[in-house]
Length: 518
Image 1 (cartoon, one colour):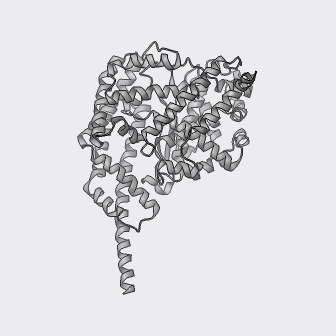
Image 2 (cartoon, rainbow, N blue to C red; image 1 turned 45 degrees about the vertical axis):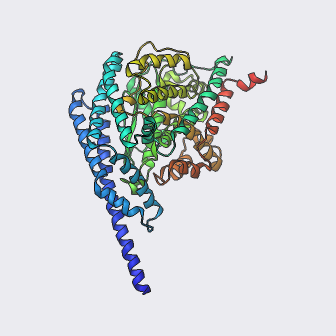
Image 3 (spheres, one colour; image 1 turned 60 degrees about the horizontal axis):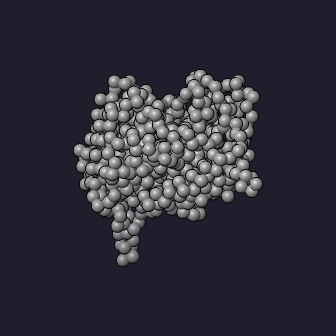
């Protein structure tokens, strides 16, 4: 009897394993179709001929349809139902089932025709946005934006007709941090950063702001960008560097590409942009090779992804020790920097200026007001509280209210970001959530490893990267976001560390403590 019972248990376990393996193979196929689409999207934004858009849109639409069909097939649902009731799965397998279930439920709610239309519309939207930005002509982009807003509303209604449509879209990018938490973080940043920014503006401290002034050749800037990536330890065997109008990183742990941009009068911008995208690529490369094609080998959504780019850009790339290391390298490429001191480079890299219109050029403090503006506008668009035709005026009004500046052109205003042309409504809050998490992770790493300044000064990132690999990268999607954060830092997501970090850093730079006590 005992032997028969054990044999039955073994057979049941074998059947469950077979079902899990069938699900895993199906998920890997879906992942590979998506990754192929990712390469085509990278190509479209980096090297594709201008006339290639009509064919590329259809190619991406076809791949999107294939992926959707595979995910929503009855067999996927049957496998999930079978596996969810099985007690023999280990924790990693249960995590895969959880993540696929979430994707399946959302995908089966959306008709295939809508998926294909969204894919083709966003592919066609990219060149329309690009031309509109270059021509400073919002009206030429408005019909496309209106169509995207309508399609995303329809998409949200398919998933949950009773929910706030913006909350549904936000969950596409951050499924395990609710919108209420995101709003609370954004409100706290707005409320506590505004007085800090005001205090900085009233400070009598004189910082060096022209350390990187001049005109710098694009080819030399590219060589310096490669120096930056070398210093940080970028794995060139798994990546490459290119340029794009709006820098981005994409790919898998085997092929994580970086793009940046060069402007002859903004050397610092190309450096920080390159470091930022390195952070994304470094996370992607750090995902476990053995789990490629499954959720265990994928990044834990956008807030965590953004935490990695902001950690490297701000906590490393804008630090004193980094400039003590990297300034001599930059001066070898650009002799005009030979008389600049590391302190002057540090001050220039951390100046606060509230008269800046461009998000990607913003400092650490005002950056979050840029995010709040975009968040409020896209939320109102999706909820139907704002008409597309009114976006430029509302955008300009909010810039004047929050930052005291008013864009003179739509190219510097509501056309500056690429995200809406991708249909990425709900994406922007993850930038601020990522900055908050970056500070929390860096504080936790230093609590465990000790002060990291000397490591940064020597461009020795083995300890920091090792900690990130173990606590953030290697888990993939095994844990939900809040559990991942708690395991890495010992506490839930909190803005405390970010606010403490910027208060200390900018208080010291601008002498705020001394002035307060004077």
